[in-house]
Amino acid sequence: MSETKEPESTPNNKRLQTGNIDNYNYEILSEDYTSFDMSFKLIVIGDSGVGKSCLTNNAIKNTFDDAYNATVGFEFFTFNIRFNGKVVKLQIWDTCGQELYRSLITNFYRNSSLAMMVYSINSKESFDNVEMWLRELRTHSNPDVKVFLIGNKSDLEAEREVTTEQGENFYKQNNLSLFMESSAKTGFNTQKIFVKAAEILYEDYNKYKDDNSSNDMGSTDENNVNNRQKLDIHNNKNKKGCCK
Ligand code: GTP
Ligand code: MG
Image 1 (cartoon, rainbow, N blue to C red):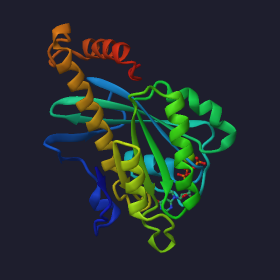
Image 2: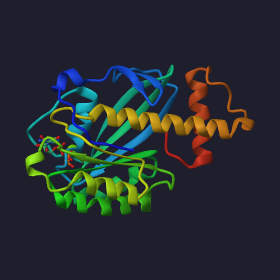
Image 3: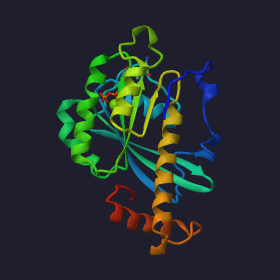
Image 4: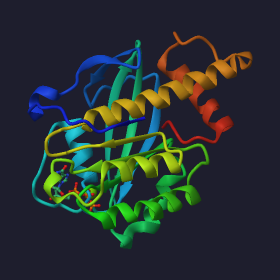
């Protein structure tokens, strides 16, 4: 799947709250919503300065800062969303792109269910380096990790160095789960990317449960503790990172 069309609207009137995506009704919940049915770890990687922190902050807190505050190590966020009555919690590790910290980041790959690889559309270098990021990820992560490719800073059309087609080709050639362009500045696609991440992980979890119904994974109506335990079972069997 790839979506790049920029809507003609201002940042504030394109905030998603409730809606329907691929036949799922969803509702974005507050960041401090404590109860959940399933939880997944997600890592955001890519070159320094491509906008990883701004993208995450915009999606979750609806903010944008023009000033560059390089992340030191990593920053932690949560994104909570209800799909068809079930609450999915994403535990997001926004990492720093600086080479100095690269070995630290690899520790986060191992437990992640999904990785967002970000480049900026006005930096060919950051796009060229996506190959290196994917290699690093494949080396250190679980083999079934889902991977998104995000071309950020789509508002900088006049400075574009990477075409949408180049992004799409990379996504197709490497069998990634999603490609989208985004702008942390205008809010274009920022929330949608995290909604899609939650949806893909939610579907994957349900598919696993269906495939293993003979293992008595239980009904979906049980309480949170039981669901977390079930997900732990799921992760141990699937070697997929998730859950605290
Ligand atoms: P590290 O933490 O060093 O890895 O960088 P990062 O990838 O987290 O980049 P960050 O989010 O800090 O953004 C870097 C710079 O790009 C800041 O000056 C932001 O204001 C700017 N920026 C981020 N996203 C966008 C965007 O979508 N459009 C524009 N025009 N600028 C952006
Ligand atoms: Mg950052």
